[in-house]
Length: 231
Image (cartoon, rainbow, N blue to C red; front, side):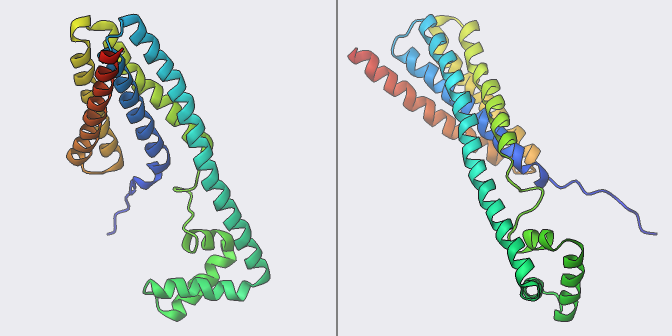
């Protein structure tokens, strides 16, 4: 007796997951680097907090605008391709049927069966069949500008608040190492969480995000020290 079960594929998460991980990672990394750079230049706690808050506001708006513009460009391209495909289906239905048949044949389907499948799919939803199998556009991967913008801005803000809270609670004389260690811990947690949500290798993702985070903060500290000494 056959048993039915529901498969839980993770690809449907790719749109919001990419934007969420990017936003949170950028929030932690850019804000902590900014804080460390200002602190290395002998900035007072008040100056560090002002720089951090300004960085959060500017960064969140930048993430939202950047994601919206870039994903909108992708969406515009998708819509243009769909409009072109819709016109071709209206004007050259037989050629489009042959094209879809050829796609399935290349994937290993017998030619007669491939043609029968193509006919049935095109009778039901011709544009949907060509969008999915010819253009590679599906419901899971289609561009969603608004979702990407709000997700990136929101997760950026959450990520950026974490190193800023560290500044508020830690003593001034250990501010730089405290922010560095806390931020690397946040980045490692983010890498592990994102990898788990996406079904990727957790250790690899954690090491990758932590390494680049440490490098960015080290460079920011170096710049802050150099300019702080000269000023």
